[in-house]
Image (cartoon, rainbow, N blue to C red; front, top):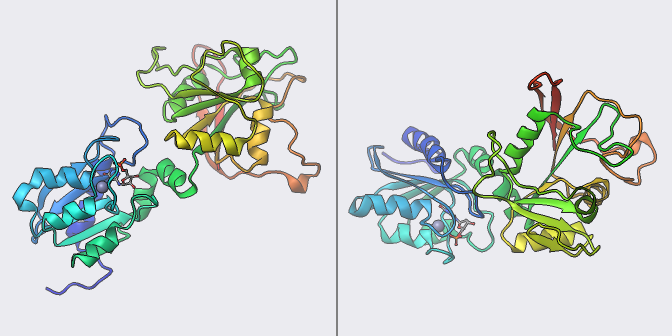
Length: 340
Ligand code: AOF
Ligand code: ZN
């Protein structure tokens, strides 16, 4: 049978769906590397071997599948969720491993945005291997949404989270801000924090609230793998109790420093000054807001002056989700708005 370039066999489409499932196998630790799956098919479309990546420093998905297949890899089609890498990093280049194993054809979903690793498709083609790309590419990018963003932009993705009363206050006039949102919202926040690798606050928040920023599960137990707890700002802090103090007020500098430390997702929980600095710099990528049915009439807003004086100048994020969080133990419900 002759093959038309740019098209995919039905068995390859099914294998890519399976490879995406493999990519998100539970139990892989959160880390700097993308989640990747790979399926090797013989020329009847039957699966010869499967593989997936288990976190930074372990075999890439392609290498894992090749190891399972052994000699049977010869003549197969490798279906991979990400373009095979072309570099020697923590492990060797998958492009060359695929060539050495005698793979005949490679179908991948997402092109590798990583400037250090990309180029695998060219290496494979130069070795005479048939290469097709783009199959379920949007789905593959979604699996590694944050990694793709951070790699494309060479900086971490920023989620800004705040709680607010009906009248837009995040703290009362005396500065108290605990329990604006209810138990359900606080639990939800811990779940979201656990998906990030940095929690970031400003020096003001540390001086006033002394937050622990520990991430707890639904039973109020601390998680084994905690995000890096970071405070930023030029003010000196004795004994802040967090993991890192970035001595800068500039969001660009802070994000650069965090990216250099292999961090990809910042959960911004700072006060109004820090939030305003990130918004002014255009460095908020996602907003999560909990609205509580409460009125204060005084107190500080979630964000400081943005330099906007007329309604036409308002920032208008796009709402991607609205969820009602039912009240727990007699509390009133809260609303969670997610925006980009
Ligand atoms: C993975 N797993 O299955 C594939 C990856 O940290 P390194 O040196 O192992 O290389 C990571 C880069 O390799 C990653 O950013 C991506 O560009 C490429 N492909 N990475 O962790 C995999 N296929
Ligand atoms: Zn690789």
